[in-house]
Length: 190
Image (cartoon, rainbow, N blue to C red; front, side, top):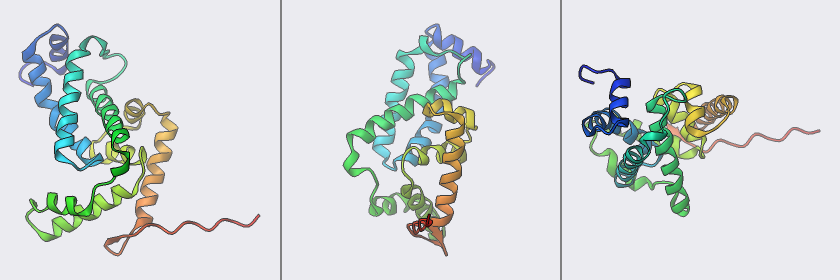
C-alpha cells in the first residue's frame, strides 16, 4: 500500500482523500468480488454488489470505527448485507443453474480443473444460507471465527457450529468424485 500503513490510508480516506479511497478500493475490491462470487456465481451481480459496497463505504466513512472491527471485516459485512438484500429480491432463483456454472468454468485450462470447480460449486450450492457464507468466509476468504461473527452478526458459538455442520454436510454430500444430497439420518426410537 505504498509507503503508508493501512491505518494511515484509512485515516486519510476518512478525511476525504480520493487517493486514499482509490488505494483501499484497489486493495479490497477483488477480495470482496471473490467472496460475493462464491456466494452467488453471477459475474454481473457480483460486480454490482462490489460497486454498491464501495459506494456505501464512501458514503459511510464516518461510521467506520477501527476499534470495533478491522477495515476488511467492515467491508465484507457491507457486502454480505447487500448480498442478503439481493437474495431476498431473487428468492425464487436462489441457486445458479449448472449451465451457468459450466459456461463460467470454460475459461479454465484443463478439464480436470473444470470438473473440480464444478464439484466445489455444486457442494457449496447444497448448503443453505448462512452456512455457505460461514464456510466461504473461513476457507476461501481466510477470516477467523470472531471476524465471521462480526460480519454475519452471529454469536461466535453459532459460527463455530455452522462451520462444523457445513464441513460435515459437505463430507456426507461428496462421494466418489460426485455430489449427492446426503441421506437424512434416521430418527432414533424413543
